[in-house]
Image (cartoon, rainbow, N blue to C red; front, side):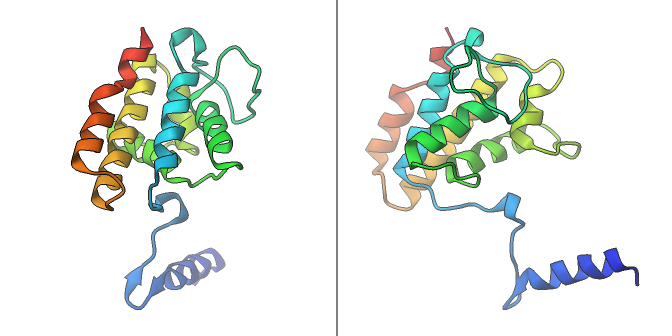
Length: 166
């Protein structure tokens, strides 16, 4: 058995605890909180319209830049809301999972950056994954009892992130 194959087996075995396979770090689904809605709303506001969106870029973010890519908008909102940047915060993960629902990510090294930078990517698609993540987080908060059904409906019906694209 080759060294890399042995290492892979060791990692797989380390992920099995009491008969359950642990999710890879990139697939972790942390418990959502109200702060995750704030992160998504702030990122949506940072990407207010197409002139505020940087359709290509990396993960080196400049706060005072006139436009931001998806990763940077989420990173700023995340750090501001949580007091420090948390790479696997529920809001960040919800956007990553929304991206996976939209496209094949098999060639992606960094879901947020690669999705943002994909040839032909439209601003409306960026807003859509934020909206989808917002719906997902709202549903999680409803399921865990943080929100009532009326509150969840109010959140989803009174703030349509797609409307801010105008």
